[in-house]
Image (tube, rainbow, N blue to C red; front, side, top):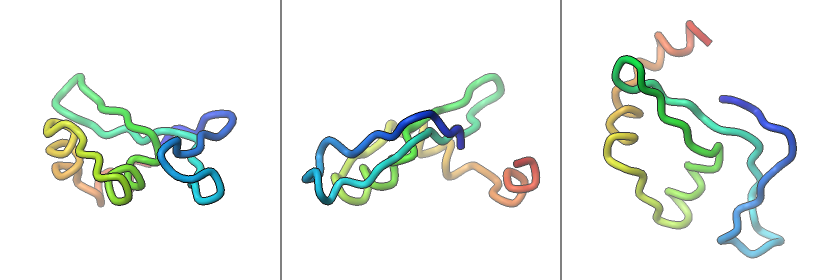
Length: 72
């Protein structure tokens, strides 16, 4: 995850309930490709029904979590 300066609140939630995010997640894709999404993507999917592009979903599901964790 890449952390950025400042925070962003979810614009779809009521202000007092809006979660904050301050970065992005990067997901490796095919060789030479990486996908980036805001750190609030899980919130957008679960609370607002957002459906990322299928190539992003496929890349997330293809990540070897153990290998990724050992690199990070």
